[in-house]
Image 1 (cartoon, rainbow, N blue to C red):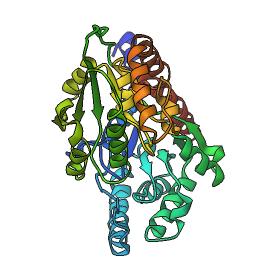
Image 2: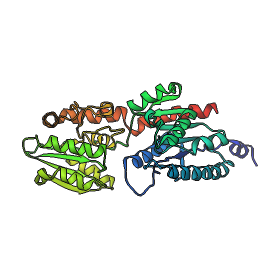
Image 3: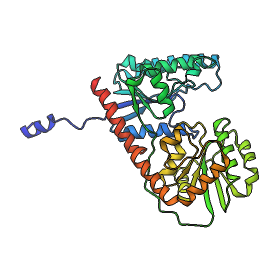
Image 4: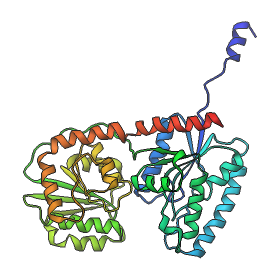
Length: 371
């Protein structure tokens, strides 16, 4: 070997990106059923890749108990113990640089990450950790305790909502907390919408009992007070579809039902063609439809609440006030051009995938460097 060849061979090649083990106990990012949780899990992996890491989905084990069943929780604990043993053995020969769990809370605690991270000696972090003190008693008490134990073990807690921040601080986790605003892949801006006599309104939301159904109720009540020529297009379906349909029966001539739209390009086309997105957002955690709409320059009309204050670039209507919600729709329609520009600017500054990648890269990189 010549000197020149020897020198070239001795030079280090490009470094492999640090591997990050990724897990979502509620729903894996490749789950066939669309939802906001699945989309956030997918975006989390995309942000890690954009930050220069190699994200690796290490398990698809679902640990959600939606019924508060002690027997179901016991079965899930046993399944998690076996899965943690399997993962620790499989990853031990070449451990990832860190473990990141998306969403750990009282219905779906992370029963894998702490055990595997401890056995491999790697940093452990959680995005969207959530503590609910009232769940420390009742049918989910055992899972709530396990969720809090995982949160207490984490080296970094990436919180997104004001509600989660308050509970995490009250539990004494301030030293591990970092604010990660909800984010999405913004995509290119859309062309300005031409003025037209009929106001084209859009709603994108699952149809589930509880807070989602209550948001639909408030939306229908507000629209009953809205004057002028308008049409509402609704994207979504779910177990409460019949109840939602009944709420809008008096407005049937003005409502078009589009059903579920899984194709992101088609959904973006709906955002681009609308004038306003309507969603009151009762007890909303992370309003992904709000972010998606604003990414397309579509102003949002929401009710006042912590999540809406964090991510909606428009005046908010008072909660559960139908005439006020109708007035907010009319005001947003009148100021739509300015609100559209503000919506897109807010996404780019605070809620873009690039902004999330910078933050995750810095925080996880620091953890890995200290390992």
